[in-house]
Image (cartoon, rainbow, N blue to C red; front, top):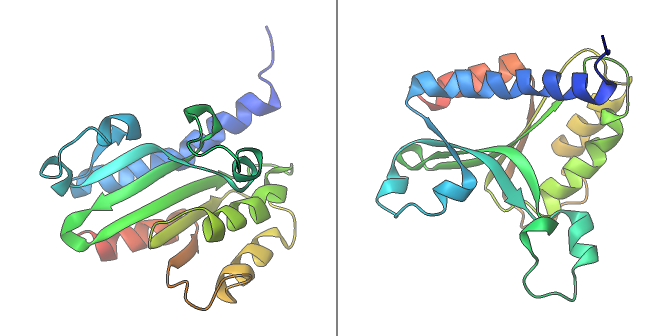
Length: 178
């Protein structure tokens, strides 16, 4: 019997956090739809609540790779887990999930996530959903402090970036989506 790889275990743990998002929103009237199907909907169809999966964006790395290419191919796109779309409440919020069950290298990616949030994500609301007990000391503090102090953000950037754990996300959902 083969033991699952560390990457396989991390992928399964990440799915737990994605499940929390789905389970918080489905009972509140959200339908789950892949981004590639959502973009094909008419404006009238987009007036209902959707939890959009695999939301693409051009990462800070891909911009550097493709800066001379006017239309990057779909292979150059990175993806966030979700966008929450609720036209009734004027919410169109990107959700990036990061789970760290055991000590590892995911916390080293937090500055990358933050830079993508401030430089590449265009949504007016952004949630960086973080949970698990394996984060290195100081990693979550750094991310929360960067968000709180608006580290490297321009003065006219009025987007709302939030760092939440699973409980805070549930509370946010309860307050936003009755």
